[in-house]
Amino acid sequence: MATAFHTGPQKAARPAADPRFPHGPLAVLDGDGSAYGTGGIVLDCPARTVVELVEWTLRESGLGAPRLHRNGKDSDPLIVLTAAAAVKLGLPERLEGHEQRRSLRLPEGHPVVKQVVKAKWRLTQRGFGPWARIYRKVQGRERQCVQLAVLSWDALDERSWPGVAEMEPADVARVLGVYAQRVITPRGSTAVSGMELMTALRPPTRAVQDPQTGNWVPGHNPGSLGTEPMDPAPPEATAEHPVVVDSGWSGGFLNEEAYQWVRDVSLLSDEECTLPFAVGLDLNTAFLAAAARLVVGLSAPDHFRAPTFNPKIPGSWLVDLSHVEVDPRLPSPFTPTGERPTGPAWYQTHTVAYAQELGYNVAPIEAYLRRETGAYLDPWHDRLKSAYVDTLADLGVTKDLSDAEFLAAMERHKDADPAMAAVLAAIKATVKGGIGKLRERPQGRKYREGERWPALQRPTWRPDIRAAVISKARINMHRKLRNMAAMTGLYPLAVLSDCVVYPSPGPSPLDFLPYAASGKPQPGGFRLGPTPGLAKLEGVQSMLWAVDLMEQGHNPARHIKGGDAVLDEGE
Image (cartoon, rainbow, N blue to C red):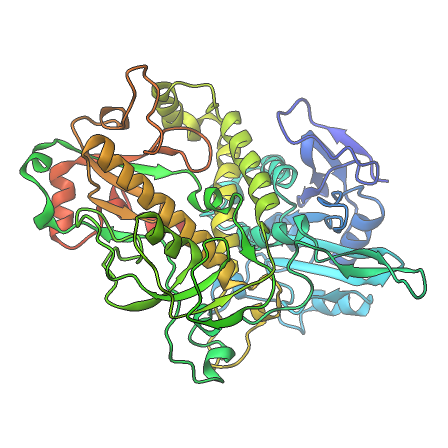
């Protein structure tokens, strides 16, 4: 076992208590052979080649993390290489090529790849890129696998991990260690980690006893997505998917996406135009809030003609909602653009249920429904919610603050501790990216429409689950917009995903949010706070600025923070 030295006290993730992994989940290796772990430990790594590094990691490092679910697998150790370490191990400092940086790979003829193969190790099909997995087939129950990440090959994307690639190795270890402890040991981009976390918390198999032999064998784990990929119903698929191309489907598609809506300028009242400020509110991790207690389909879709609508059954319904009247100062709840539907279209269950909630009759023409259902994302939601709340608390934003104190703490939180601020950004990117991965599109110039692409091999390629999350998030947003109008008489200027802009008499959300005489926030509207689904201040500009953007056809919610929210968030 490698000897660990401590570099003094650090407020960091404590190494895992599991005796098999005394030195925590990961280490950052520098060019001098120092491997910086979590909790301020430093290991001495003598490896001079990638093969030696893999063998040291598995035999001596004491790195790894216990499984998150009793039917799951332990996390493989992660070794992060600084530029100096990469060069010392014979790797190029940068990967060069015309492709996007994340899809670059070492050529198969590179000496390091040849060394790895010669020593009877394997690389996954993705090859030796910024996140390389080196493994051997399982022997007994132990699998042998090490995850590598190369910092100078942009393994840590700047949008998901702001500033981390430039940090000192010990600080990189602290950021990744806290993330590994609260979320999962990274195995790729934050989107990959978001997806891996779903499977780690709902493993596809569990041990069951074979009645014939009495032996324990892998069987289906109830509540999971199982081991086999499942084709979506045609309206849930994307236009290039084989179920669409091979069947000649032309019946339309679900369009459950987040809002991008701006109110028509002609619907602004004189009173609104005289208010001095436009204030943007942002809902904390709105998709995560929507994933809570969300019932989704677990089995394959069945087709029904003219079914009676049932809000408890997850699925996709072809239904005409063009008769539903909505105040024109609000977006339509049924479309991402906020425009009123013009005829029958496909909607996820939550969207149709909301039409019923508004008092309208719904008569589906056809539907694709799933009989077996469950709250698949619940453990994922619970773990990420705890990670988000605990990390905000480390940055001084706690649940016990008054609304005014909360706004002040949020203004300062990113400066309190850049390492923890980076963990928070990574957690938010994990939520968004994990939901996005449920409907990953084909990549690369060689792809032809109608071919299966690699993501379709995953049981977690489930566009219907993504649609359920986004539908619920958009409906939650609309319900709050409606309640705000009823309680305050205020109508939004614009909505972009989880950000909404209101005209306001003052520069703070406290100037227009509804409070009871006791000073408590009124239930049903937007409320400030540090938990998923509650709001924070996104930005403040003048009302003139907002109206000017609206007249030019731009969305003020996109720019209220300063900059471009969509590009900054990497959507």
